[in-house]
Image 1 (tube, rainbow, N blue to C red):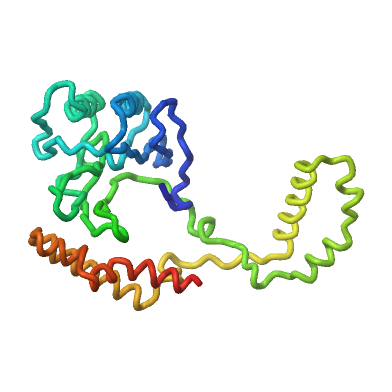
Image 2 (cartoon, rainbow, N blue to C red):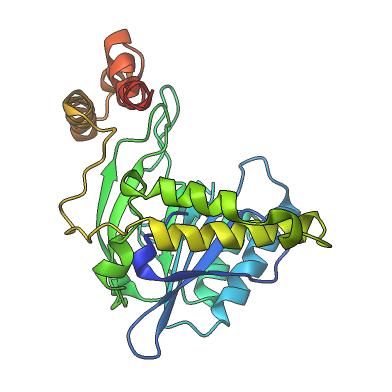
Length: 288
């Protein structure tokens, strides 16, 4: 889970035996806060693993956060999310999961298929759960990354988050303009033998690292803060952008008419396979 530094997120540890989950706290205005988390349950996982996941959801229910957002691949295909019902027996994981959601007062927002693979029935496996109905809107079902058969979901999460000032977020050291002659001279004049006398390896490294940090603060200038729209990704060039647009057009054609022929065109024809992976290839070539 990646979160921008300007959102001031902190890692949250929840006592649970379910391992495939990560959570963080986002500070909102006033005394409010949001719990944001990602979960994954393998389709081959055991019933015991599923029970640990539901137990974790019950623990989240009892946590005092004003906003709760839980996302992930839950791999439960037997639920009809339009009606929040299932046709399986009471002991089935789909039924148990629905009961857990109701008991935890969670709302599920995804209504369309999120996994599409050739010769297989499309399914809704990736969920977005919140504790309020109007907390999520404008969900976009975009093509998956690379060869993934899971769609990429983009949506708006409605909250009043506190954002750090842009200057604090964007300022960084400009190492290209550092006074390295002064750094070298200072390092050469340092009496390291006496400075590190009597220290073990860990203490010596801490002492050296602290000294280097002081040199950086003294001899490396801080770059000026840049506006939000000024920063560009150096690895995304024009050909990469064209490939992204072309891939998006092919996906849109398939989405409007989900036929076997269209999914074959999107996944199997050599030209389209090249298109699906061209973005990664072009970015990797740009980096090297």
